Length: 490
Ligand SMILES: *[C@@H]1O[C@H](CO)[C@@H](O)[C@H](O)[C@H]1NC(C)=O
Ligand SMILES: *[C@@H]1O[C@H](CO)[C@@H](O)[C@H](O)[C@H]1NC(C)=O
Ligand SMILES: *[C@@H]1O[C@H](CO)[C@@H](O)[C@H](O)[C@H]1NC(C)=O
Image (tube, rainbow, N blue to C red; front, side):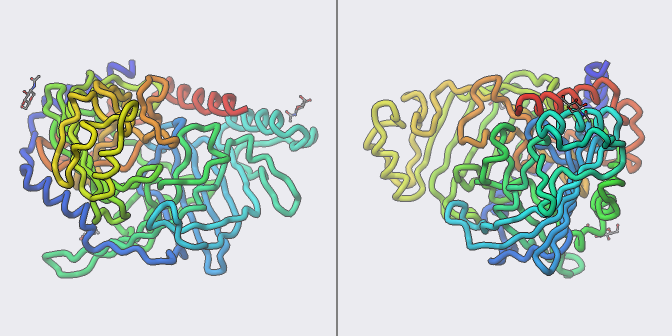
């Protein structure tokens, strides 16, 4: 049933006939420069986190977990944070919510993640509110099993009421039952994006709060110190036009926001896509990506690596080329499409002396190209030497991917998401390592605008009866995943 809906909506879009020709590679190179130069971006140190910050969209965490966040940092270093968990990838069906109070101490700049600042936090209390009877029952059973005696025999939990799962004063702690950790607060970065509107000459400010990443392996989550970031939260004071942000602003843990139902966009790999910002990868790389899909199952990718968080000091560039499988709708991550990517050719260009020297050192099991022949700024094809073992890439190289497409929050550009990389720094080279969440999205800069038909209809979000309100089977899958994750952890 659901699969059929997907195919129907795909055909709908394909035959809608309004495929706008985009700019050309000029547009892509301009956007690449923007991402690299980070013109108009500043990052104050220490970061000023005072204020209210909200999600821009329904977020996907490894698992998958679908959630939205509203974080308030008060002037006296205390905080009140809300996390809302959902059954679906559009955040229309709330499962349960958390309210957290505590305090945060901003520390010194991180030595490991340049541009980030370390912080320590203390939780004061954590309250859970379930919005569904089945979730209430599940939570009670889980808390009771993880922390025997935590819920007294006389106590009954009901939906839409708050219950402590952590209280510092009463020495109560059963956060483990939720496989919950707030370690994202251990790494912070604030970016201020300044844009001058060419027409009105007025200055637009956008403040983003980056918090630490959540480990892709749920069993590691409670012990992991972040080495990268999640999608940023936006400062509420600059979000007049973001309807989702307004919903979040007016929400609390007993009244979770219900986002408008949205069409599920099919992924159509055709066109060119670039990073919209200097990206941070775990273990710790800074990079800018440029991917090209030819629409005939072949692809090319440029991965420009840097040593600094503004992507100004290049270290090396990697070019890869290959083919990919047909997309298959994911049974695990609602809204996701699975692809297998095979890299058959690879070229590397060292961009600084350190990397050049390093590449020349690799030999034997770590061989990367012809040992001793690397020159600064000169590209070398490493296809003949079966890739670059030192980078963990043996050609042909297969990666198991998860992808998704959607409009940005202002419906101006199409975004392409691909899977979050494993937090341990490895590559997703086996099917069981296929991601269940996404990394920073790429922005379309060339090719046809596949989603364009939809952008022309203004009642876009709710009018598509084929795709609106989540169907019941999917809710069950999301719920099953939630249960399974918790079971795996215990
Ligand atoms: C908690 O677990 C105990 C032992 O298994 C059981 O007797 C009790 O009824 C459970 N309490 C709740 C609230 O489920
Ligand atoms: C917000 O919406 C108004 C009116 O629709 C528009 O004039 C303004 O440019 C928008 N602001 C942003 C930041 O998009
Ligand atoms: C795929 O398309 C690209 C660009 O049009 C072309 O260069 C390439 O030869 C095609 N590959 C195959 C296998 O058809």
